[in-house]
Length: 188
Image 1 (cartoon, one colour):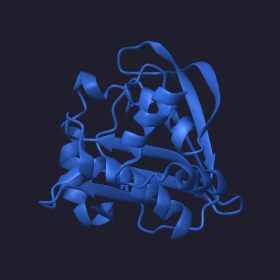
Image 2 (cartoon, rainbow, N blue to C red; image 1 turned 45 degrees about the vertical axis):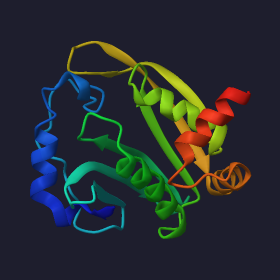
Image 3 (tube, rainbow, N blue to C red; image 1 turned 180 degrees about the vertical axis):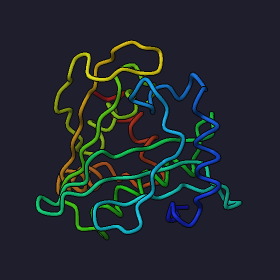
C-alpha cells in the first residue's frame, strides 16, 4: 500500500538509517559519504515521494521521482526496500507507483538508473521484455560507492504508450508482472 512519505517521516528515516552501514544497501548510496536523512519535499511540484507499507501499515520501502513538467518526464526514480526478502507488497507498490506517475501525475516518460552489479539490475533488465522498458545506455565509472570503488551506471526509460501497450500484450498487472516476466523470458 502506498502512502505519502511525509506522513510517515519518523518511521521512514529510522528504516533508512538502519541501512546505512549494511553492505546489502551499498548500491543505494551513490556517494562515498552517507546522507543520514532522506530529504523530503514540502510539495509535489517538482516530484513525489511515497512509502510502501505492508498490510500492518509498517513502512517497508521508499519510492520517489523528480519531475520535468515541460517534457512530462519523471526522472531519478528511486526505490529502496527495507526488508531483505522478496515481498509481494513492495513489488505491487512499485508497479502501482509507475502507473500513478503516468495516470495521476501526467508523466509521459519514466527515466531511471541502476548501479551495474546491483541485484536489482536483473529485475530492471527483465522489464525490457514485459513492460516496454528500453536500456538507454551505460556510463562507465560514473559513481563511487561507500567501498571507494567506481561503478558503471545503466540508464533505462519507458514511454507511457510503450508501457501500457506491453502491459496489455502480456496481460501484466501490478499483481502478476514478475510471473509474466519469467514466462516471457523463457519463451525468447
